[in-house]
Length: 473
Figure (cartoon, rainbow, N blue to C red):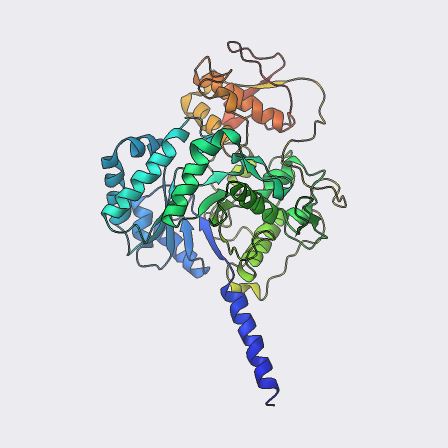
């Protein structure tokens, strides 16, 4: 019996460190819907599920009041449209922090501020205001003496990377490095903050299902893939994408900065051309990701980098524009019932099993080809283009433009100021270019030129000034 005592102690000690070194799970609470429960009911839902972190896309008073005293840690957002004011006027930054942060903290446990969201793909060209806005918001926090409690960062889309495959070759887009990436990383280093990134393996799989095994994308058991640059073996696309960002930071000598994943998820429903958007796949991805985050920390490149990950999203949002998937990322329906049954805590994981063992949809899953960094299969013949419907109204056009250049992953660099397709500087022209870029990247598939009725397909090449629209990627 005496011999067993030290052994039992070591086993318990192992499990203690194993569990305490794991990461944390939060959720994005989006509200682009007219069917959602009250904020107070949402807080009760979060607590009942053991979710102790939430991120919102604004600083709505009703939400912040409802979260008061809940013990749930909160990330608020300074929207992109306020970056200019926050960057240009210190008084605005102070007023915003006073009204939206200091008025609630610490009763509402605001732990971080996301200044903007995916700013580099924002069609309003707000990139130049990002760093000054971050610094002014930080100064405002200092004026209220809450800067030690609340960290500041800004979520990046993976499109900020020039290279992402293999992970070891990860690098940031050259035009962003000196102007904004390095100044941002300097700021994060100075303030002890983490780099926020949005990571969606679904987008990579959807566009490359012929070369990315579904099990690899869904964090199921699989043989893994070896990174030819560093020899590390990856068993899921999520880790590979995270390490591409770590590699990009390392290339710039910022190895000391940590990462927080502010968005990731998988849609439970999609259009016919949205490969992999199914209920079973969404359950597998999110369930397996939660297990991976809560039971082991780190990535192959950074084994000790325990991650905080925010799932997208808490609810299905029926008023979002874009393809069907955009309205079906929710973990819950508006009536608070689960879209699929997965646990959110370590305790719940004891009884969790991923029910999916065979591919639900997609290409040949036995392939051992490595995942690509972008592009889609050019399988359709003939030429067609997607253009904006000028009669749809400014709101729909702007909403579609924001989606295409943001979450949709369209290449909108050509419609930025000074670029070859910036002129004519009209909403319809810019929306047409963005819609067409999205449409071509989706292989001109049915349903990819809709944007809530703001776009339609034409068989003749569009002409806006001297800008030529591409026919494929």
